[in-house]
Amino acid sequence: MEATMFSYVRRPGILRQPAPATAGRRKDPGKSAPPPKARQRIRGILGGLAALSLAVAGSLVAAVPSTGAEQKQDYIVVLKDGAVDAGTAASAQQGKYGLAVSTVYRNAVKGYAATMTPSAAARLAADPGVDFITVAREFDQPEDPGPNNQVAPLWWLRIGGSLPDGGQLPQARDAVDVNVAVIDSGIDSSHPDLNVQGGIDCSTGSPVKVTSTDTVGHGTFVAGVIGAKDNNLGVIGTAPGTPLWSIRVVDDAGLITEEMLICAIDWVTATLNDDDPENDIAVANISIGGPGAETENCGKGTDPMHYAICRSVDAGVVYAVAAGNSGQDIAGFVPATYDEVLTATAIADFDGKPDSLKSPLCGTEDWSKVGQKDDFPAYFSNYASGSADKAHTIAAPGVCMTSTAPGGYGVAHGTSFASPAVAGSLALCISEGACEGSGKEAMSRFLELTAAYNEDNRGFGFEGDPFRPAEGKFYGYLAQIAGY
Image 1 (cartoon, rainbow, N blue to C red):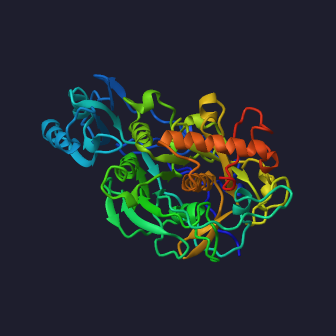
Image 2 (cartoon, rainbow, N blue to C red):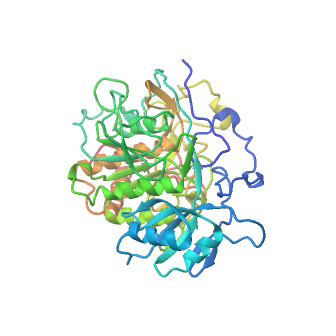
Image 3 (spheres, one colour):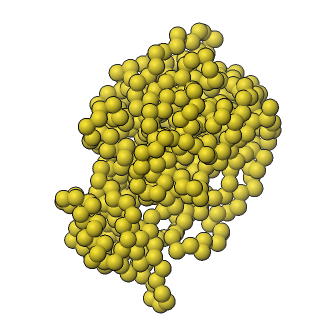
């Protein structure tokens, strides 16, 4: 049966897998016409981020038009840390400046999302209680991999402990017990191969407890790569059976906004502050992204999503994110370029073994047309080049991936699925007691252990890893789930 795969599309947001048949025919996204909507939109993974703001009283707000009626826009407002309560401040500022508050954030960041005119935003930026304001960015919906029962190569064999000499894998581990959040399109909680503990819907910008569903399929696929059970059914995840928490950030129109993503980050952080120790999130996966750049001081004053992630990491969460599928430097993509996250690049592994140079065993695409080889970086994978980005970049399988999908199983490709392999590996490392401490400490320890494992098992890696580097392109050491 032919595999259903995610296709690369020239729309904003989600880190999609490019279909080989369309490779080489991408338009220059910088030449695309701006959308008619008042809200500024990120136009595709390859597109440049439009200049959305100017400095007003130390804050970033949209430029005020000199003529014509103003159109309202969506903004993220970050309050100064001295604010007693974000909700109280939002209510007061709503009445004072004539804005409409939609969501209040209290954990990863103190602030709120609101709709207002650019001139109202300029006045609000001068308020002594406001740290900074930015126009809310917008992303787009992932595509559905669809149900598919095709048997494809078990990528798990590669990072699960298969050895260059064909040695035996370690025995199956007990179920992992580390809470992992999937910030995506949702998870099919009825899937028998997944341990879904709860669902939060941030698609309106505010967290709402729900029974998790997934009409898109992308989040369910990600969830299986992280934690599909070791139960003689379907596939095995990197951290088998680990508790999964679905956080939906895709609305019914297929839109992903910055408000939704910050809502998800804020909720994840809140689990570490509430009275329920059973829901504490240790790892979060974000296979979503768009054009952008690293911002100084953790985004304070310029990038509220970066600011929220930094504070969430400070609270104890480790984030795994996808590098992107445009074959470019991650320095131009967020959140991949943020120094505080684990950024996953993708490699091709067609048989679960290193150095085998086998032909692909999934799909009907002619992989030779795009020059894809076994045990090489995925032709579409983004990469690092600067020293700061190299320090948080790691590789994982991302071609011919099999995982859970609503109604069954599917096959897909992309850094979207390399990222959850890293997230699951990290959850396993935490479960085994090898990655301890704060979010930053656990991430650093994970990177150290990965580098050490690759150093001791050089045959484990791939053409393009630090021992066999590709000129100008750093893909990182290959993640592993053995040896903890």
